[in-house]
Image (tube, rainbow, N blue to C red; front, top):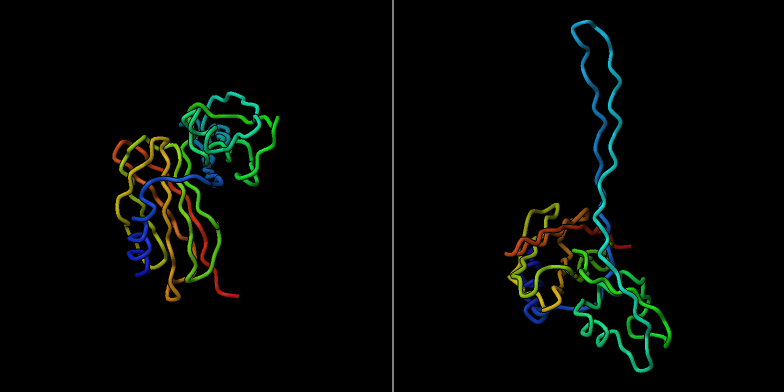
Length: 200
């Protein structure tokens, strides 16, 4: 895990913010609870488990791609990150748009932290993409692995609230689940995880 310092230190080259992302969804659940019997020894029905509340979707507007449009110019026009547009529209190749294609543009990008790839091997690089944070917010990433916790250097979010950096595991890193936590000085806090598996 010693390579986190080097890898996140290298993130200086990515201090700005970036653009491509895929969403990693998180789900939580509430366990069912039962009540105790009353003094009259009558049994009450257990409460049913509640479904976890999902985050509200960001309001969307539509935009029809014109000849010569690029994702970078569309993102700048609507002041959202490229990653947010890619995620909402499930764009397979951000470098290829079709004239007449209709894109949904989020007016307020949802807060998301995406790790690419979501599964890898020791000594492999992983890209960390955060979107939906506050413009110019100071973001720090923490990696919680089976070997312990590591915290990287600060990054400044771009004007569209995006940050991208890289984390590289070493051959000595253990396999298992690695939790990634992003914390900002303006209230941003989100997390996701990725897997490190044995080399095949």
